[in-house]
Image (cartoon, rainbow, N blue to C red; front, side, top):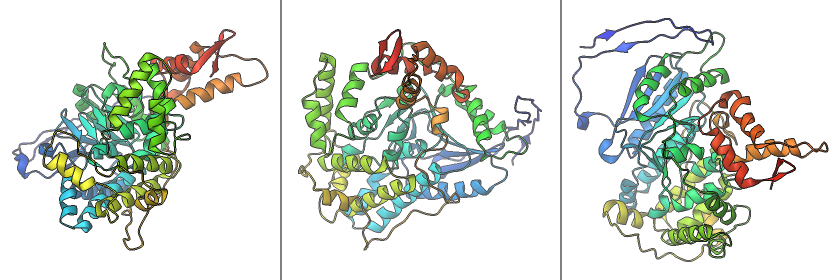
Length: 500
């Protein structure tokens, strides 16, 4: 029997709308975890909550989960009673989503059941594309491990909540795969530091570096930082807000309301927090992973080997080179190619390219990759040592093109969602996350590149980004980020800043 206790409170706000607070109680017995579906769909007033519920697998996505979320999101998109969607995990704070269930895919591949593997990736990537182009706000709670497929569920949403438990990474190089789920589209666009030519994006994709919640926030991988203990209250608050009259959940105005509601629950960064990458390390990443200057992985390795800088920088370059030598050589080359292509393409083409690449790596007709073998080694056989790669030769351009392109004999496409749109830039990401280095550069150069001899001070830069732009006013960490950029990328000339 279900008993609902309803408490309604009419609350005023500066938006001139009313909110209704409901408290739900139930006497329904709790389902045994083994009986529960892998994804739960519940209601929080005018919000809809999607909860990943496969805790024993750290919420690793399978085809059933992707398919059910895709279909339900299509229904939410058409519903007049759904204002926004919350994505979260029943397994927090241990994991949000540890990735796709590629161990099952590897078994399919060994059994020559390639149609099942392709369906798995079609369902997952169709969900990624749907989320990326969803017209209503989606808020993702990245409370715990957020890797691979978990990045795909979060990186395309405008509101990406990191916590003290977040562990973010794209570790596909270790299993001979590639940074998929549209990450090679997203990272070149949203990463805040050392990324003017997709350097940090490429670094994160190739190294599989694990990033904490605070660092994910500073890098733009998350839009907000909220303590794990505040997420339940935030969920309740998000369920209370509704668009004012003459607006709908797809309006920019309502997205702004969602952002301000999240801001009410933002937590300070840890007291002893120090950003993971010093200026010297950022310089190494910027110099060695420059997409416009590196056509091959060998170019990057040479840059790391020959890096000239401080002792700290040289040591970091050597550390990166050593790490890359443990990764799949063919996967590194494929990842570089995908960053090159997807960083300048639109989102639909980028995710389709991921689908073609995944299908080709599963079938592996030309024996160029070791995805299935390495996945079995690491995830099925649970080997602790890196897989002993045998495919070490440099791939020809034609081979890379073949791997990342569709095959006429293997037709496939993304599932159709309700939005039917695509774009080259996210419409809301930049409004609600920390500013990128490129934005700061544009502001400084606009102020100083004229004939009046105008100058801009660091204080003016901090004030502009921390106070002038409404959606970022008083945003956590914004002054620290601006200081990092000004210190590393600017020089003082006549008591003002000039971009180097």
